[in-house]
Image (cartoon, rainbow, N blue to C red; front, side, top):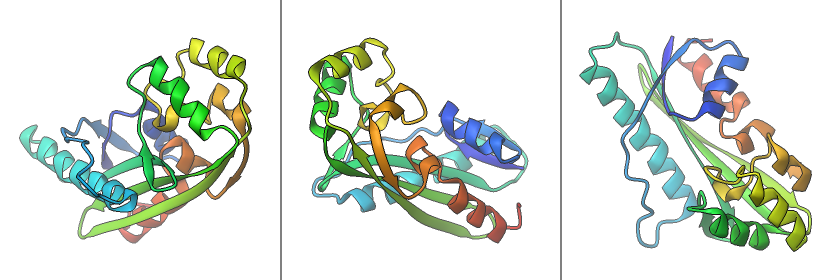
Length: 189
């Protein structure tokens, strides 16, 4: 049994898919990017802060001791973090920028149990060239909202991804192979 410091239904589904018993906790973390913070530094910091917040939530609720797992996922174009779009206009602009280009998806994991274990998974995603009509139709579904980069590879956004180099589950939001490594090191799997 672990605690997942995340309210992401995608992360919960991925953990359940591989048979991990967990309870989800809602971390309280300011996700603002610090000035001049590199994408890898940001994603690592977010995963750590979410794990620490998860520990605090667990303690505040007087829940039994168990390791806390947290993750943070970002889409990076060049050196710029492409965040979750604030609205569909923002999503449209993000998809236009990603169209026909490679970008990188980073997910940092932090597991705090007997020790603190951290790692980052990286996946290169190639998006096909998108027409304005394709972006309009996709945005009309509402799917881009709440998704880093404005697309969901596990949904209709898969139609736009021509190639990935790395972990598919990383792009969804929880790299299962790497997560399994951390959990095995902690003696959970």
